[in-house]
Amino acid sequence: MTNESRCLLASKCAQAGGVNCTKHCELYLGLHGLDGGGGRSGAAGLAEDYRLVTLKNSPARADQPGAYKAADTYAQTFERQFDAEADRIKSLYLYSAKSGTGKTTTAAALLNEYLTVHYIGALKRGVQPDQRPAYFLDVNAWQNEYNEFNRPRVPDAIAEPAAKRYYAALEAAKRAPFAVMDDIGVREATDGFRGDLHTVINHRVTNRMPTVYTSNIRMKDLPDVFGEARLADRIGDQCKEIVFAGGSKRRRL
Image (tube, rainbow, N blue to C red; front, side, top):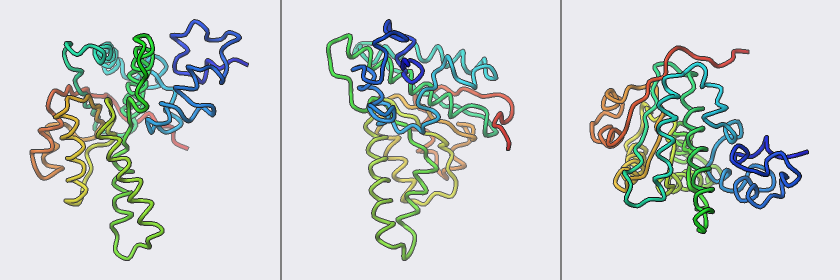
């Protein structure tokens, strides 16, 4: 049994579907690890359901032709990461008023496109690909980690692992050359959490690091959510907003 259905490189690999297309392929191992959940793909922090989604196979593509036309054009700029003289790769803000329209799926697809371009491009240039070229931060889950170790009288056995995960995610989101910040319109955030969120965003903007944000809040309305204009202004810097149409396409059981 060949391995092309489990590899992001399949559409660009001459060996895909052949006798050498196995889980022991050196390129596959570097990107996905032996069990498919490691390597640079695993380091990106994507949930398992998103690890193999691309712009081409995304289930959101058919319902969002306008958004995907813009996403395809955006992905073509990823080669600029290898050219110090090229225009910067800008950021994206994926918005829809309702959940379930495909924003997160699309953001994950863009992350995988960037990851693939980086991995192949680095190897072609004879350089070692970054261990974490891209990172996906679920902002709601990250805020839950913050709350987990900041509640009163929380046992150390719970607080300490939560704090460790929280700060590891903070550093990963700051340092990855490309990042997704999913569901950025957090409400009722404490000053401490909002400060950490600003630290991540400010670091990325200052260092010209492309970021894809998703939100159910229009970019122009973010100051009302955050209670200040500063953080919203940083998000909007060199950032294009893409609007997702329609209502939720999630299956209801």
